[in-house]
Image (cartoon, rainbow, N blue to C red; front, side, top):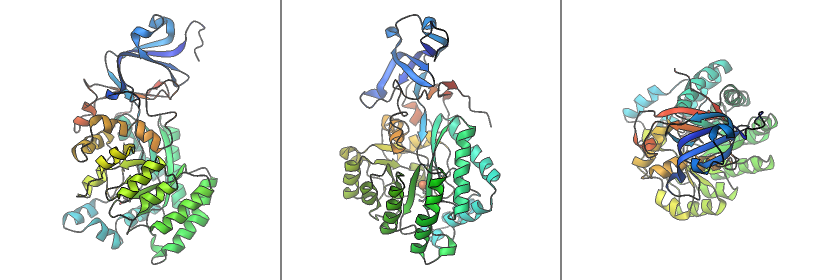
Length: 417
Ligand code: NIG
Ligand code: FE
């Protein structure tokens, strides 16, 4: 709160062009000549400067001139695997010589090779590599990031990954949401015994990470090279008993019915969705489950099947966009590039893409009451951009127009590499 009795707000940002991204407004919810009041790390006033009740300096302890810059809500990357050891550049070479992602996975490469590297890495090693990836995301205005485990596949390593994710949130001005993805792949120790592994995930790993408060949600990879719908159902039932929300890697390579299953558990999101059926889409609409589309994985796997964007639109399913940052299928740390790919590959509009990394991404993380739009009462997370129109955020390829980031009301300049 303002300490000086004559000041209403801690700070006031004036002369901005505000893309509020409010769901009930058209055209980015834009407010030209706008001002933002911040108090106690929250947005206490949003509107046109003409509507301010007094001169700016009499309204706030500190006044910042945005000088006509565009401002958006802080960007939210709602699906990442940011913490892992090693890389898969050689696997990339193998794919370029003709091997498919599934073939490499079946031959013991793929996720399992990252599991070997992640098990071998110390917590400090993992933190150091993940910090670099997070820094890259933050430079482009990311203020909230979801981070999954899933490259440990044993309790010790899954915990190690989740602790690193939590440490990132404690060290940097970014809100981290963690997801337990123990059911990402079958570890070599359980070859041929997937149900036994799921028993361990449900009976030992999940209760342990939940008891330590290390997981905000539970995810699985429901796929021919992952787990069946029935194994996923057992895991989700266990998550529900612990009061944890679920989400799912669903219908990425084939239609396994995972989306319908996820929706039946009121999943926060179903992610990937290239092969989702009409039934799956209807189930998502019914359950208010967000469709998280991952154009980086679509691109890197040279997928031909497009996610059914028009059918999702027609059904009123909110669409989010994320990096899926991971070593095997989406080795990217650029959320802005994902906006461009969402438009070029998936034919989303730049406004839909921006909603996909703000308002709808917040919903995918159950943070819609506090994040994702510029609205009074929400967290004062916002980004300043050197652009003339918000469509530029999806237009440039490789240019970073981020001119500043405010997290919980504080200016936080991402460090230079
Ligand atoms: O989201 N689909 C499963 N999980 C990751 C890929 C993980 C990997 O190949 O390392 C994904 O695409
Ligand atoms: Fe993923």
